[in-house]
Image (cartoon, rainbow, N blue to C red; front, side, top):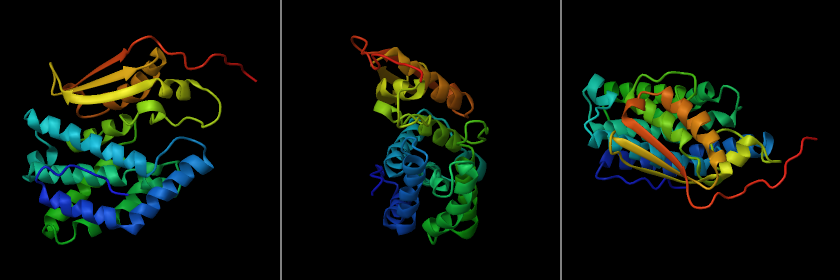
Length: 257
């Protein structure tokens, strides 16, 4: 599966993406992650479709920030380029959930173990050793801190954390919900119709969420709100969630057995 990421002239990112797309190891980890999530735990998708959606969201968030003169930490702290910050974000997004191939519990930490040698492989010969090592540390930081309760310390990590929550359209919410009967998780997930990212009116980023039912507020507040609050990019983001058109009924009847 190709990640289909727009390069916008970033040649090194293009080389990294070629290596990710060609990696049978990564493809196997993504497939195994979904076996753990969907087949074994009966929760929602954490495999290749989630990765492609989330990677594109993360890169768009970063580019909106850079366009608004917000400096990524790869640039500020390491004197690298915005293009290198894009490499950090894409690698972290692509590898953030591979730990599910082992187990969902502590998958963020497990992802570090599996991702580390892959980062070396994907960056090989594209940078000098010092720069590649620096970027590897930044990628691993972003992977670790996508966990809700761990505070990220970089713009890039904050972008990855928030992007993970924004794969929420039409039942794709990142709060794991059972694939069985209706719950507040599954009902609210089905209420999210569309997520749109753009330059904001009062802040660099506007996240506009279109809902078919007000139950979607649970997803917006419980996951996006929490992840945004525990990120580095909260001051730069405005979120608007609205019910579009006539409110759609999702569950007609619910009983406790």
